[in-house]
Image (tube, rainbow, N blue to C red; front, side, top):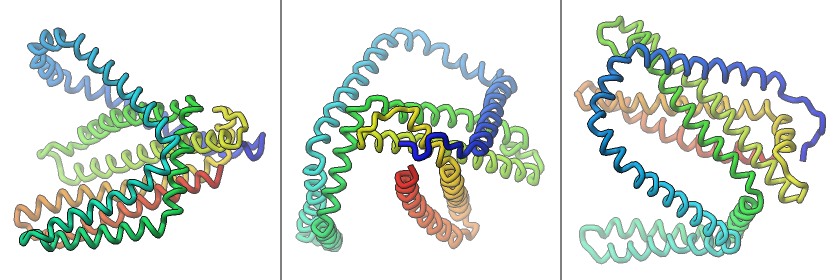
Length: 329
């Protein structure tokens, strides 16, 4: 589905991404080794405390492995069954669920209205249920379209098993990134004495700022990878739908042509995510101050409002960037 067969877009973006990626994760590996070396005594002490548990864990290990194997087999079988069902009945399920929840809300609300204590809550549930029911009736055509899209997605996954590689890679990368990011924070905070009360507060503030910058770069790299994977899936889905023999090679050609906007998506998403995280930390700090009677209640309320607004922005941004990925490819 590549628009221009020999297009060479995004070469500079790829180079910048790779430099940031290897520099960031090289620092993460260094932090992992350095923290392990600095605190080897504490780590050994912790492992010594676990020593009495080793015989118990060893004895139960075969049974634990068997439980995990059975669990994953059940999950795999159930996933396949659900996909087969959704491939054929997603429209019916979507319509049914869109009416079920409003009816349940109205039913519970009517029951609560008969009580004295919860009558007001019952009225509220009836009103909410009625509004949801009206929305479901008004947007029935769009709900059917959503069901059709789910059926399309289920058919795609069942017919193109290669598509399952993308979320597996993203999951493994998320775990890998999270571990190295955690050790990077420990290294930075240990170097600048963020957790040490004897250190100069100004030096500690520098450590916090450096930690936030490193976290920001981690988020940019992660979301770059995330949107690249999303681009692969969109391209693969388009080729499959148009019966153009999809492959990872043609998907990469499509993604390579739109790397620059994808990277901008990642930078904006990382900025919003970082802003939300800073707000969250401010909320926790302000809550602690309020509980200690330091007069931070107003700031606490403002931070909560800011976090709520930013969460809405993130939700909208997820939707629009996914839609833009579909349009760009």
